[in-house]
Length: 280
Image (cartoon, rainbow, N blue to C red; front, side, top):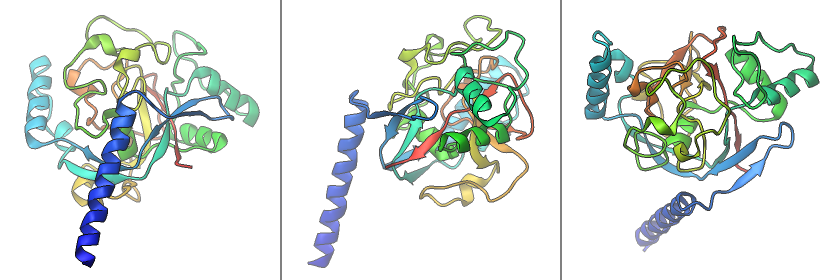
């Protein structure tokens, strides 16, 4: 009798999780605002999702990259393996990247100086760039949020159905800010491509800027990590970056599973960040 009750419990739990996903995917997205920086947040419900890529998907991305430029190493893509099912507790994530205006408010209230402006100058509704990992973390501490783990970023980008891009499985350069369809020489205002939204309503998960994650980088971490709220290696030399940028010309870089590697002390015009908050 106990076994039957246990089985019934898991069946009901699975039905509930599927219902929550359908509710979110159907457009009824839960939203709230961070009162400190005014950032709009959307909710990612608890449950499992597919993280990483299969061998076949890695082979396809590798061939696609080499069709654009021969000599691209396969190691750039094998670090997405193995694909596995990861469970995450529910959390809130910023709908957009942190903007110049929001970062300027942080600097004003904490006595910090704005970082060096990019060549095109600072524009309030563009994503802030030229921030180190430490700069991003300091902002999150001030705003009472935190940088997303790599798994949180990927679930927010692709949902639970294993899609290749935030909007689905078909490449469409009209759904993101990148130089593949036409040259780009700077960032764009955040949220400029609503048709490229993820299943949870997140914008610019691909395109505009790469985004800092909380995790240290380890190319073999997927093979050794736990699958329940993974938080990344305990130490390392580099941090994980996710999402292709306005300067990336390789289509495979814009897949939800692609893992960029970043020196946490460097500032680059291709890099910004968004934040998350625990459910509650």
